[in-house]
Length: 375
Image: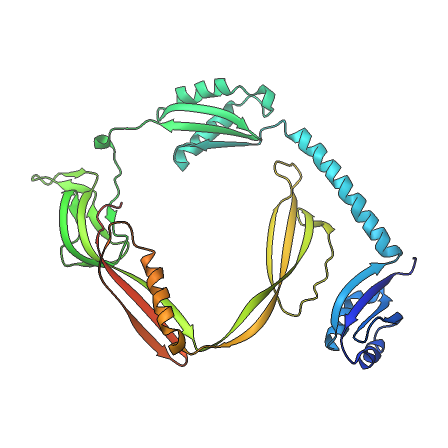
């Protein structure tokens, strides 16, 4: 049990020749032939990484890899008790720091106003301890110091102080800072009915997405400019389009369904724990993400997960003529997704660009649509 070894199980033909090549670089112990194509042997723990590469080079399949010995045993003990100690310390810190408020959040108003209220609340908090914070007193202070607030409610949620505001609403006719109406689509204007504001386009104009249609002001006979909320009915022939590309020959990567997950626990950038997985896939894709191990902790413990997905690389030969109708219908359905209720289709069709085994379907639907109602 004191010998630090790695146990290897392999599968493959012509194992004698392959193992002879391997033994020139790595020492092998306790070789056992379980079946004609299955066998097991041991190598020194220090050669555990090297042996995997040699097995792959010899064309053998690595079925499993396990470890034994004093070093591996002590490593597991250290990790096991280290995790327990980390959990206990984490719980202790969590219980201690949960009695404090660390963040003030303001909801219901603009970013500038919420920042102003946030600074005011932080300045008037007598303490960060939850038991010493009077939410009723803070509500009275906020309501009496900000004219744009009609009502306020303050509550402690977790370790955040949530300030929820309802803003005083001014009548529409005395509000300012109106925004122009802009087009959300590309199209040809066919009809205009201006209700309020100043037109920036005419019937027969071609507009693009983002173009200004109606300006937020009006001018009287004396030349005086008044700010108004722009309103208009603007009917246009709108073009919606979707493109799909098809290749007669292509190479695709397909996941086989097998995956291996590597887990790391970090304190800032310091590695605390690693499950030490071995990746036996020849081809794979990687997805990685990091998240907090437990929320509302003073110590920034994070868990990093790296997922290795085994992939198979396949070649696909598919002539365009065999799937042409299906691709056109797919492009049509993807374009129809953008239609809204009561939209009127005036025309639809597609164009085809192709060359060098590449075929591009551009499907276009023409609609009659009111584009004058969006600011």
